[in-house]
Length: 494
Image 1 (cartoon, one colour):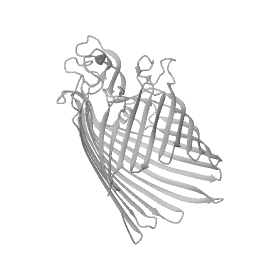
Image 2: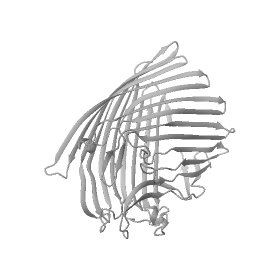
Image 3: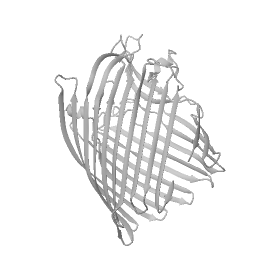
Image 4: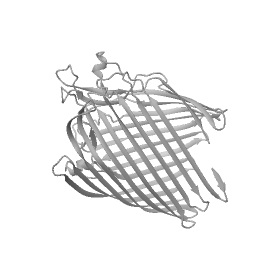
């Protein structure tokens, strides 16, 4: 960083190269490259220019999700594979430019423009030999997407009884162009057996918004209104001649937040808002949904309190209603609507300072999730968690040492609609320790799964058939979580 005549320019560049086989019996051959850079120019008069750019590239082989019955029967281990020809490659390039200008002492204009290019190729086999007992059920998903967007926001600060309030207004636009969105049946990554879906997707989103935040001493109101318009276009390359379909839809989305300062150390709030899901273009244009932009209605009532100088607590009761739930069906390449749903629950968390350098934090979350129009007992939302929690014990800036020991917990949860198949929960702890050798040089280790727990990461209730089975079986298919694993890292700051 350099400061000359009240002008400041700073730049940052980071690179990462990683090669990794992983714990799987079939080598993962994972390669990753990360490049990141940013620049900040501030002339000291309220005008700020920011530029960030990044590139990510990776490729890998995978063992995929495996059926529990194959592990129980000793056919494979937890880190084995039924089909180890899965895998893929992906890359993403991002450029983001921001410019903030001070129009007056109370007025500001913030603008942003961004571009992202994304390539994706993935080979998967979820059902093994269920559909094709000869070649297997491997599928190939591929697409190339370019995403463009811009946003401009006007901010006007004003005062009521010496309390700062704010008015904002703005516009935004985003365009997604996806070329060659493909789903095909393949064998051994090479042989094309059948093209299921192939086409080009264009989705454009335009929005205008405004907001008003008013501070009446202890009582605050934050209200906003946003209008979203979506244009959907799909060109189906599997039809002869090519067929192009399009449609548009718009939705008005209000929000309202009320907060009250009961005391300098206790604040309560009530949030209400309406959101939407932009949906899958192919599903919209196929006429498979009635609501192109189904809305979500959400509210939460909560508090934040600082009981002592060392203890901060927060909690909330919340409710979420969705006009339409969506389920992605990977081997069909579509997003299926699955009806209305309702969720409600509570969140609780705390942060406590045990000493000058030691901190403790944790949170606990509960959610009750059900489909609305289904029969009782058959209305569970697959994989919706009921209980979750995470927390950590942190040592910060003690004689050059920094450390944290944290955990993540998720309880057992239903894997299908009638709760007859259970996705097992887990409790996993990690450890992170670093030491500042000099002001610029830091070395550390990261220990994942400190207690070497056998836990399952992704879990789905899937109907599949193995090569030697006469009939399909529906049960849990999973990807094993990382076992005990140690990574080292070195950081040099300049």
